[in-house]
Image (cartoon, rainbow, N blue to C red; front, side, top):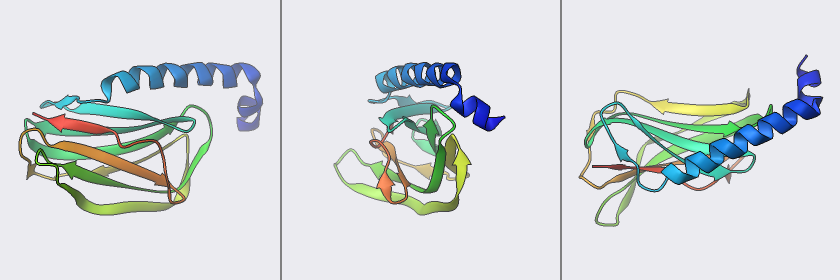
Length: 147
């Protein structure tokens, strides 16, 4: 079944169009999305898909951080890792929480989640995510600005 779907020209074209739409919409919101109580997302383009961060915060108190690597096809995301970085208003940067890694593969989407953080950051701090596959950074570093 998977071979039939992957080889289908119609399915491949539909997935390519869907990925292009997602990337176009995502790039437009990635610059400086302020984090709200329910969560905010920022995304950037990556080869054959996107990398997104999602932050759950109340103003500048961050409860949860997630990063995902989505591909617009049945491609595998293999041997991947991610880390979150805080970019403070004064220009300094710091890695937040240890880097997470997986040596396995996922179909179409790989992700990590840091829960129960409880960090308070200065207003204007940007939380950014880095995602690597086989030690190659995927796309830029999507960020969410805390306000």
